Length: 249
Length: 249
DNA sequence: CGTATAGTTGATTTGGCTCAACATCGGTGG
DNA sequence: CCACCGATGTTGAGCCAAATCAACTATACG
Image 1: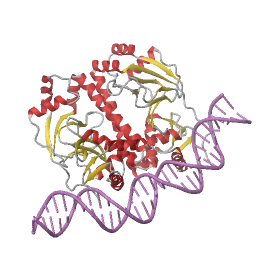
Image 2: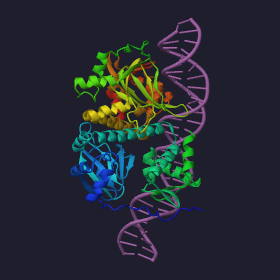
Image 3: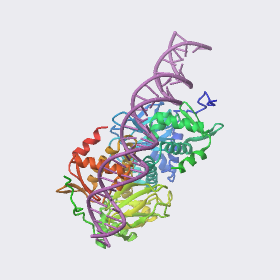
Image 4: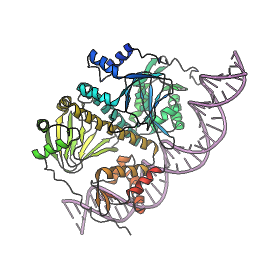
């Protein structure tokens, strides 16, 4: 009856130790905001970065920590979250290789707004935001590109606000699954497999609901044959059906 | 019993026609991101801007419009909002003199994400975002400052998301009133008067609720003596009491 | 003044939260 | 290799905050 598989199906956990000079240069070069810089510039920039490896579930920094570092995911995956006084948490974003996070405005806020946790074994390249600003100052093109990325995140946040204000939980979960699929989906025989360990709790805190409600909706989607799931994994069989759900309401 | 005044109390509606060269230069100079530029640079920049006057409730642009303009509020006040298919709308922000909005990324999105409406008679200075980028490219300091502003907006949006996910409507309204008071409050005998026409509907769409619920909460606050209100205006008598509300829950 | 718009208030309904009991998975150590 | 246990996920029942629907009042504006 229940055709869910017993095994989490090969979620590849990337090696943590991929931070050789070569890899670093390549990553820096592929960063959207450094892409247009020369090789020499990248080399120079590389010197200002240092990197740290994290195990799964290690905390990279805590919300409220005084810190002025900008971080780049060199490998692995990072969860950004906020938590309330009462312990409730919300998951802001999941970042993959090449995405950045942390503080890039040493004057505005000297402390971190969110908590960053390695979702998988990860290598994080860090730079003091003061230095990063010097780089941006020196390379205006990079500056504009960073601007675009932040602007995009702002748009996404506003879209989230719109959804929280006006859409049902079912809608929001469908939307979130689609987004995750676009970002982290890998074609498998079972469907578009989300290449991250995603618990009901994670999904709930991404959509502003409770694990119980998330579970109910997921069960419903499963019954409808739209997705397949197991413990900490989700695969989407019919992304179109999910997208249809967005239209109603 | 009800001590609310009959008259909207002097909300000064700024003149729409304050877009003389002098004023323009002054405004440009006071823009947070141009503040550090020389007078000559400002003059040069001024040439690339042009301005348009809007009456109250005029639409500056519609969500979805194809446009690559960046806008700056020279005078007046602008509402940014999104609306759903079903007509429901959310109010993203209210902007005053010196704040900017619109599209500054001509490559990312060529169309507007929100609708912008003049909340008061307003003068809006506009620049093609391509030209704005040229300016930013030329003046890296400005670029970094724009970055900081966008980053701040992102943080605010994320805070809003957190609140929508975890706080009660009463909390959110209290929070929103405090924010508005900080931004738009003017000391009057009745308290901190919010210098904008703010309907229950506006308040509701800023906090992700319905006008009815907003009205109920506002009534409650009024009974508690925390605020005074009338048609399209709110004055805060005891902002501390509002702030206390944030702590519970 | 009269009318349209904005705001209030009540009654009813409901989506989703809470609390609670139970099922299942997967890792660990015997 | 299996049994066990903690973490994770599921499901049900009851409840509550807030949405909806609806009737009504107050306000400003022409």
